[in-house]
Image 1 (cartoon, helix red, strand yellow):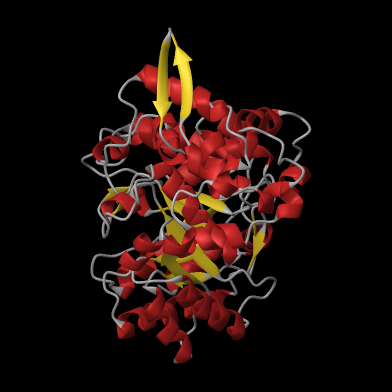
Image 2: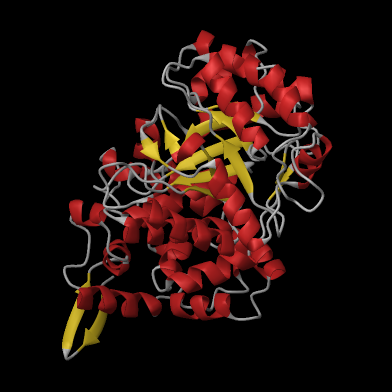
Amino acid sequence: MPYKSTIQNITYTFNDLKTLLAKASPMRSGDVLAGLAADTYIERVAAQMALADVPLKTFLNELLIPYEDDEVTRLIIDSHNENVFAAISHFTVGELRDWLLSDEASPNMLNVIAPGITPEMAAAVSKLMRNQDLIAVAKKCEVITRFRNTIGLKGRLSTRLQPNHPTDDPKGIAASMIDGLLYGSGDAVIGINPATDDFTAVAALLHMIDELRERYQIPTQSCVLSHVTTTLELMKKNVPVDLVFQSIGGTEKTNKSFGISLSLLEEAHECALSLKRGTIGSNVMYFETGQGNALSANAHEGIDQQTCETRAYAVARKFKPLLVNTVVGFIGPEYLFDGKQIIRAALEDHFCGKLLGLPMGVDICYTNHAEADQDDMDNLLTLLGIAGCNFIMGIPGADDIMLNYQSTSFHDALYIRKLLGLRPAPEFEQWLIKQGIMDDDGHLLTVGPGHMLLKNNL
């Protein structure tokens, strides 16, 4: 059905919900590249006004991709909790925004309502929000997950220690791991992007991390970010796999371009659960996403990139992951042109993921050919810290020498923790204190028994 809005005696008509969502989306280069963006600022405002009046029930009846054509759509519809949705089913998108910003939408209420919100509803309401709205609501959402430690508690900020190396050299990776641990990084995961997906190379890295973790009894989890099919083979050969990683998208075609399906992810999830390697919880999946991945695979199905991104969260939500990470600026300026677009996209992703009940982290990053710099990342890091982001990246010098992009450093995590009074995951914090790396007040020690112990065993 068409949607209409009138501004300055000009009536704007949007032929369907898919078009309306795209035209209402804040400006970004990817939607322009796809021919989906509003032509003018006024048209964007008109679309947002029309979108505000759309009843939430419409999203259950007017599907962006036909049910029979797309397994992500089927997942969204089949997993929707109608009983929970009943509490907000009378809202329009604009009324949902107002309610989310009200005191009635308490942290507990937001947790309860999450299964009743579809990704399209979350994407729609985010398009009506200013940055401060996205921050204010995300701050109220508390999503807690557990494997060997507890991630997502209020007053905590975890980090992924990312010790990548261009040739997967064990000594280079080990040096980065020890460097990160001495800066209090690594409670979310010690996660390596391998330079190759070779079974033997990935297995060697997993054994190395596991040996380090076991030797020093570090309460964290490890992951080598190989393709899920490789990880399945590793698990079947009794290689020490903690978390199963996979990049995911918001359409079936996108996921096929990644070489995956929901059934494949289900197989990997069940296999990881059967290993029972978690000590305090069983959240065993780690997913990464990013606005623009569907468009880059020519698999967006005419859906704007932010809505596609949010639909990917339905895939993640199904498997109760420990970590979901939007690698916000990694795909490049073709999709998020500059610092302004990267910041807005990250706040949208974080808000939508948290609203849907996911443990969201953000790789606060940009590629070297984007119109962005480290000052933009400092701004985004600070905003996400305030918004209650579950975890960020920790990379030596903020410069990933294997993936060739800029992210956040160990020092950046120290900055935001100190600025906002945030602490690592509690179990990891106690280990840092016991090792003499951190004191009881959360201050990092420059010299302590843990420093010599780790360095002497490099």
